Picture 1 (cartoon, rainbow, N blue to C red):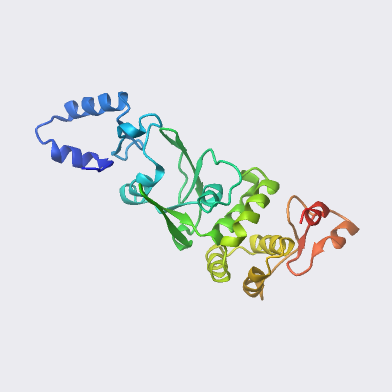
Picture 2: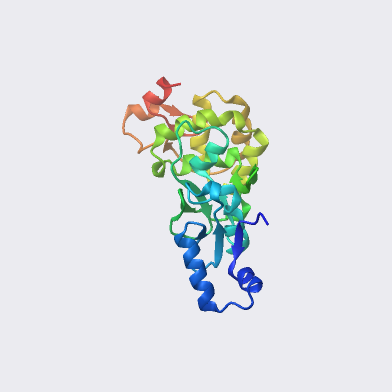
Length: 256
């Protein structure tokens, strides 16, 4: 039938004469043969593995991520961070795991060669997303603008400032003023908006500076560092972006 996502209740309905023990053993045999994967303990959601995906142990992510998280578990989600940047062609390196934002803490999951790592995002249902689609299916992904803000906010978990900065340079062309305003309204994070402003100024992304400055107008700001901690003495004054109250290390300006 071409259906890869199957729930336990569907199997039981199609096999009314099969005892629970016989069904359990049959499912176990199919798991051992690599033809069936249970996506998470207790979810009763099974993923059929067609022969063309036997080597990878599962179909592509588009075929099962949304049916499992949103439909079976009822969990709001979106693919974010470096994984989202990769869908926009903005990640210069292959992402070894898929980073998924969810409302509540979840353990990592391995499905075939796919490893999913979950990050908690408050107010996740308010975050702007779009569908990433392929011939195999689709899943939700953060907009380019939300991806940029998430990367800045969590750069310490993603390989550091230098790596994130490289990804952002490739992501800027995907961002729009309207999308940036929408993402800022969703996140409501003043410090991350300040850092975004300093980075946009360094990369001369003038089209995105106006909506950011407008959003920050009237909001309480304090002097922060672009990365690390604030220095002491004259160095702080000499290297501060006064428009966004962000201290920028000297090497940052030299890299632009």
